[in-house]
Amino acid sequence: MFLIAELVVLLTTNLILTQALGTSTLFIAAGSKKNLLWTAITITVFTTIGSAAAYFINRLLPLSMGDFRLLFYVLAIGILYVLLLAAIYFADKKNFETTRKYIHVSAFNCAVMGTLFIVTGRAAIYSAVNSLSGFMIAGAEAGTGFILAAFILMAAFRRLCSKEVPAAFRGFPSMLVYLGIISMAVYALT
Image (cartoon, rainbow, N blue to C red; front, side):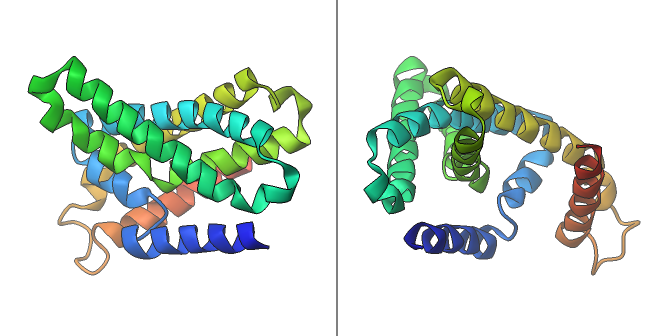
């Protein structure tokens, strides 16, 4: 029950603070192809490596401590966040200021945290996913899906934010409706 309450708090906080479960990150990034590409790549890195960390957390965490899984996932993503910032700083100090914003926006995005729980749930159902490679592939798939969603959003961004759309509906409200329709269409295909 503790885990469910923590997940609800995480999702609610993200919903209130970022307005729609990580979609505001996409909205900001969709304004520029360069921002979109780097944000999507960074989120894919976080979902892939984060899923590997989730595999080890699931292996090492006793069943009696399952309620602490969220805490350990956040800790793992936090460590990855610091390591990625340090790696970029030491690899390219000159461009660190311009590239660090992608890590800041991507690290604790709901897409990353949600992926860890979804992959863990899939591993509990399908034994083929319950391996390190299975977790990493599922994380990469989630990141790739995020990239595809980002490009779909970018295709409509300028049009839905143009003067042709009524002012009260322009921008964020029209993008949410657009995302809802696209989500239903993709869901119908699966």
